[in-house]
Length: 163
Image (cartoon, rainbow, N blue to C red; front, side, top):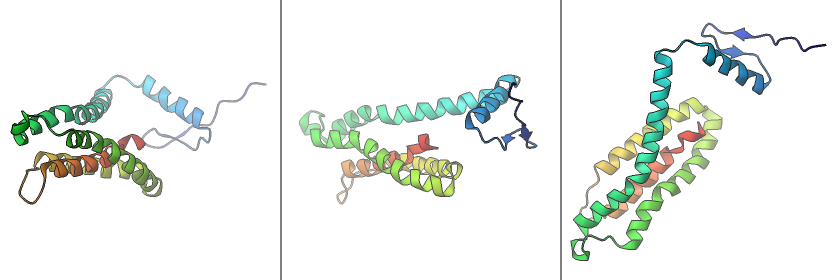
């Protein structure tokens, strides 16, 4: 005897609900995407996914240019070469912040919901990017310390992958 087709209940938006088997739910959701005619929704999804990956890679790999520029501006006596400890600390700080964010925001996402946490993480990342861009050295603060701080905050906000 063959298994009968599962009962598919859809909301007004076409979402599949009340299917307990996650594999069947995933299969039906992907079938809806496959059957949908190509349109702006598909273009928007590709752009959003592409921008997310671009910003993720950009702020990780631009740090090499950042440390070169900081070395030229703030360490002219060393022929534009930053001290190794400062260079390494700036480059590692985003990864350290990512670990902190995954643990903290992962637990919060279970509590308040992944969708809401995605928005909060995005706001944190935007604020951290602006903080880095507006950082400036002063007699009271080190530019290296400010950049490390904002890159840790950016790392905390980079945990959108948990969403």
